[in-house]
Image (cartoon, rainbow, N blue to C red; front, side, top):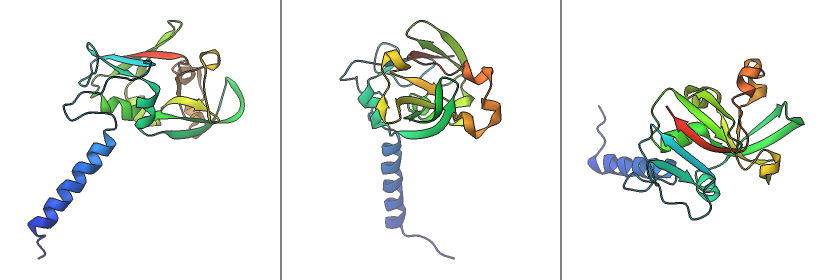
Length: 176
C-alpha cells in the first residue's frame, strides 16, 4: 500500500491553502474585508459573518471585479436579442461574507425591493452583473449592478417569478 511522505502531504496542504486564499478574493487574513477604496456601490447587511463596515460588507467596483468576473449570455424581457452580462456570481459573494439564512432582500436605488431565496444563487448561477455587452451599465440603463438569472438555460426562469427577482440599480442586499 502506498503512503505519501510527510513532505508531499505538507506540499498539498500549502497548495490547498493557496487555492482557498485565491478563492476567498478580497477577504483578509483576519476574516474581514478590506475597506472600499472607491465609492461603495453595494452594501450587504443582516446575517453575515464577514464585514468591513459597521455590521455590513461594502464593496466598490474594484472589489467586486477582483473576485473574478464570469458571464451569462441570455435574452431578457428588458433588452432586444441576446446579450452578454459580466459580473460576480452571487453565490461567490455570499460565501465570501459568510452569509447564513434563507433569503435575501434586494433593494434598488429607487427603493424597489424583492425577496430572493438564498439558494437561488447556487441553484441557478445568478450573476451580479456590472457589464452588459462589455460596457459598464450606468444608472440610467439598469446599472451599476443588475441581478441577472440565466433565463435561457431553463424555461422555468422565463417567468414573472424570476423576472421580479432581477433587480436592477441594486444598491443593497439584506440577508435574513
